[in-house]
Length: 279
Image (tube, one colour):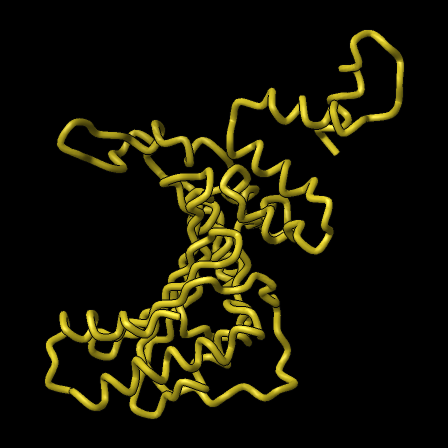
């Protein structure tokens, strides 16, 4: 809506409430930031099915916010209920002139650190009341074994944004999810290219989606893990589209088969051999 509203006064002195396609095109061409232009163009796609979802827009490079360590720590304290056991003395420094951090070049006292210039007790209360939400990501209610990294190769160039899952502490086999298992986020983009590599017990899947986004997934696997279990898990967590499940399963099967039949290969050769599992 921002672009049409900004163009309402760009009609060469004529009064009109109609924003034409030509006005929108000129407005887009006047934008100097390529990421801003890409963001608005994706929202104005004439095909509704190809427009990004609200979640996709939040992870767009132009909007993605890297939260401060202070805010992340506050959310950890609130979510773990530690703030209930903290007293006033725990949130204050007795001597603000005491050195808080040192480096090769300088020293900083507590009164020089911006994080200590605010009322930490009030800040924790604001976080618990939802005033400072974490909008860049949402913790998953289940343990996700796959670690995902997504980057854009169109317009954004070398800038990347990542959505990270959490690795399990133990590489225990995961049973295949039931067919009626709920999917928190359903991936709608199709896979153009898929590459599977195995380095010891570490399996890596690199896919290129139809919007030129590259996604890398890594996981520790065990002898009990099968290609069907791994592919179904990716669909369940919304990391690949359901229509691509069979293709990814076949790529997993080829890579796992090669790793099983020739266990004497070095790690370097395994990576080279597994790269032929590209679809």
